[in-house]
Length: 289
Ligand code: URA
Image (cartoon, rainbow, N blue to C red):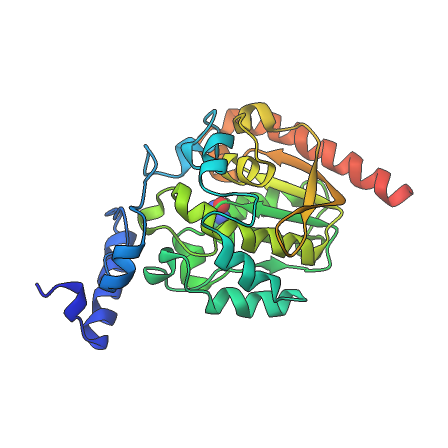
């Protein structure tokens, strides 16, 4: 087999399709394999999570990707570190559509090389509630829309159960490209993409931010605790300015279990229901103000 450096455009395309097919079949790749030599030399080695299946770790105490220590080490939350090019690109967006275009053109995340589509958002950008998940899965990758697979259907049912539909919600993810084989995004991938979702939140300006699962909650809140501890507790998310600094503007934020986790652990739907009722009460309070 020729080395990736000798790939022509057409066999690169074929290889990419093959990788996508493997990924769909559940064959997991630790890192994209089609990378120019210069980029391979420049890139730090991709670190993978202990588990390659995203679902079981959604409620684990502290996935390595997003512990506070890992967040610092990876440069989360400041304009130095591994995220500045995403930060600089995202800073140029003055509205959500401009950010969509910037993310579609962004080449700084290696996940894009194996993904079929960039998965940006769905729902109403002017909604009061913004939901942030972890990363697209196979269905989302195929359609270029977040939360359209089984977990998305559950997410929709959960919010419908408190009277909230597509027009009341705006939905995105920490990472805009599917990790091959549905593995967890690595620490490096989360670090690269974090400035993009932080800008997305700043531009959407929701009244309430719902973070589904450990990776979303820990990375955006710079939290060390796992989702089991974080869920159901209201906190404040400090909106980041274009340079990545925390502004004085805070958004009420509620971490909840990820719907994928609830599909595997239906007994925990009881806790998720309590969180949804807390959200409903909070929205009524906002409406009464
Ligand atoms: N899981 C996520 O976190 N996001 C999606 O878009 C789909 C599944």
